[in-house]
Length: 413
Image 1 (cartoon, rainbow, N blue to C red):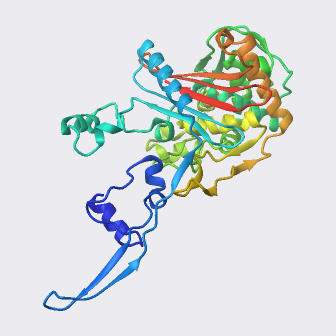
Image 2 (cartoon, helix red, strand yellow):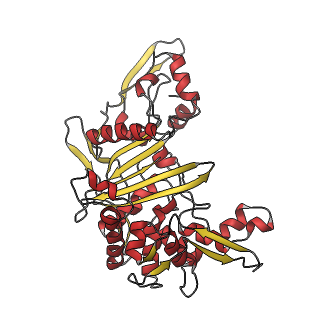
Image 3 (cartoon, rainbow, N blue to C red):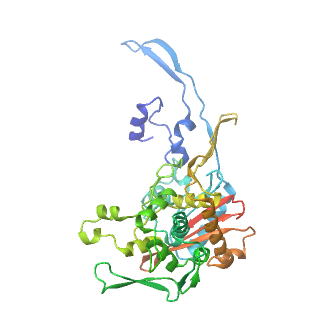
């Protein structure tokens, strides 16, 4: 226990000595009071000469409780091994992965790379090794799943589609034609200036399901910002629906250090920048937001939680690491039931269209490689966020089995 922790707990009914151990991070910090229990306290009264006059028990020993987690240890090991291999093979440096049960919100696995070996931080270990971990510029102690905020790229598209359907701005069967691989927009202040917003290839005709499956930028530029005769959502409605999916709120997971995502909009830009020119919200900002580019910053935890709502039919669940509390005899003292943050904010028929598009991504779209080795039917969405200088955030989210999902997995490298 350090000085600050000691002073904090000395003001509560928790009794510590200066040589006690204390949970520093993770569930051990979140559930410190439960895990620790309470020591037996004996009070001794002495006179001015130091002679004991009275001795009595002030409080009884209370054994600490234990925790049963949703964590699947074998899955955790497998994901860490696979992620290490992929990050290494791609020449990447960092990655994060989280798996949720979409029925309960239970965290089945959580991996943040680079990681560290807990054993090096035990008392008596080589101080140089400990120093190396603490000063490592790649921050192995930083939990990228809950605290890292990243640009999402096309990961955003199922949520833009959900919003467009809910707002009834487009029929899901309406096809949009992309014969150039880009759209051109005139500068709203100077029509002589024309901006080009590119796709990653020419896609031809695409309805909503196909646009999700092939990740068609032109389609999502169109329904996000509007183009020609097709109305768009605009930045306010995009933010409204991303907020409903929890992209700018802490989920409330029972781990310390959770960050909150950022969804940019015109008001945010006014506050964020000092120069008048930078404060303006341009049409291009809306188009970039529609495909997950620009100023957007979201945690992998917020992403996987929002996709769980698509997988389970519309319930945004609070992610939970601890399943239940047990006593020293392994009797369940308290069980944490699934907690719904919100539900019924997107029509079930609309979510079904989005799910079908994500399923097509696997069967006939940009994610067909999944079919090579997955024995179950799954649905997926990939995303590649361009950071410049040939640096990217590469995302994939998968849920399955498709007809009755039991797991949602989000990976970012």
